[in-house]
Amino acid sequence: MIKDRLTDAAYGAGWSAVKLLPEPAARALGNRIADTAWRRGGKGVRRLRSNLARVRPEASAAELAELTRAGMRSYLRYWMEAFRLPAYSKQRMRDGFDPKDAHWLEDGLAAGGGVILALPHMGNWDMAGAWVTSKLEVPFTTVAERLKPESLYDRFVAYRESLGMEVLAHEGAGAFGVLARRLRAGGLVCLVADRDLSASGVEVDFFDGRAKMPAGPAMLAQQTGALLLPVTLWYDDSSILQGRVHPPVEVPAEGTRAEKTAVMTQRVADVFAAAIADHPEDWHMLQRFWLDDLEPR
Image (cartoon, rainbow, N blue to C red; front, side, top):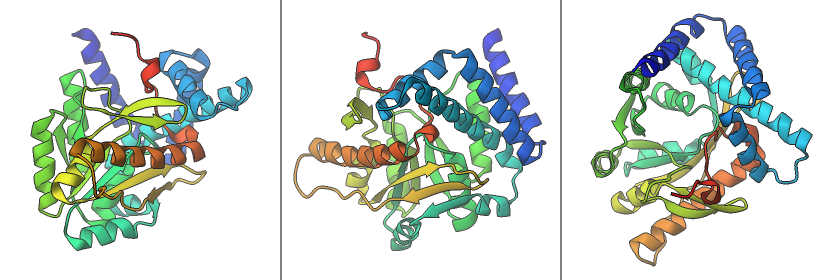
């Protein structure tokens, strides 16, 4: 389709052009694009504003508008960095992320039982992944949703594989089985885990409503004995991504598998919510998220 070819060409042009810009110029370009999108108030901007209104219900209309603008700037900062990341040196990748309490991850890997990192759509998860592969020199496995056009999905897979990641297509049990094998071998799995509208999603309390989050991280931890660590990311005024590795989410001693999964997923959601409340502009949720915002089927 012509639309698909145009979409792929646009992303290809971004990757080719933006990575050649000096970092300050790329940041300035991202801000200009973000501000233009914010002023136009398209569908994604309106959805971001609606989501942020639930995170900050006390915000005035003017405050919410500025928070949405900051959110769009953060979102475009992610894309500018994503386009430039393949051109970064290993040292730049090592220096580009400052995770607090990284000992939870390092100790978990040293123990040899496998580690699952669960992240929300915050900051730049690709930069955090590049830090893991370059600083810790640990490969990891992740899952990517199939994008349209297929050529764009292939471009994203090649991009992430160039950073040292093993990327699996989001195809249910097949991907789950591979992830379980990697964890039983003592490996590292990283999963973006704050939105799942599938039938297998787990309902959680999130700010003022109910939402669905993936069951996968909790189920993998139960099945393999791997450590489940939530990770949250945010930006400050520097060029360095900030983050925190949170303490392990333990498997409950009692209950059915489904009950344990629900408890663990809620605990992950609570960690995410606290981080998003502290850094709402860095939560890149430009889609419907809460169940009562979904259109009836």
